[in-house]
Length: 224
Image (cartoon, rainbow, N blue to C red; front, side, top):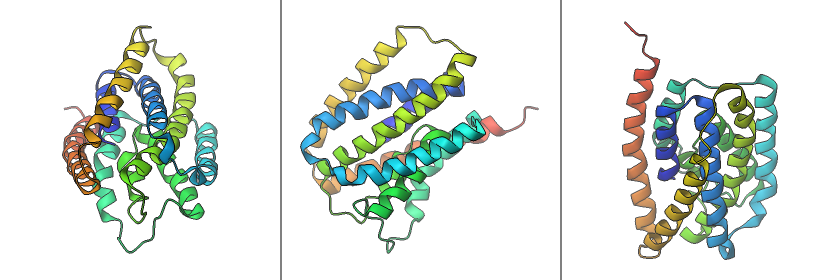
């Protein structure tokens, strides 16, 4: 969702790629983990196994290649995700409750997480054709996103130990912030309907996307 994109961008402004990925992984694991608890009664658990298979295949690929993206690439990717999501034809039946779709989702979304840190707009594409309520979407996305961020955290934590040390206080600060953000978000969601929930999320992501695309282009431009 928008919060994950914003946070990844902020971390990427100030930290190395491995450090930003690892810290974002901590924040999003806690954030999505707490969302699992908040919406536990609405989770569709049947998607987890096929999604997990796709996710671990991507992890294996990254371990083999030891790939770490450039900062500019991260900003370009997270900035383009909201617009890529709009280009997906609506007639394609991307219903997350279908096992084959959940498997493909695991491949695509985990790749996005490993390369860009965030993947909310891409994951949203797989719920376009579903009949899930906003609570079912939030709960089911939380369980799959938590898995993806745990995978990302495990992968980049290795590179983090080789590149930069973060102050110890930053981890509990990020954890507390993630939990508080979830609680505030839950209060807002309870006051709006499904249609408004999806519309607000779409326009917010597009605005953030434009900002990050500009930052990505600047990062990749050669210095003169």
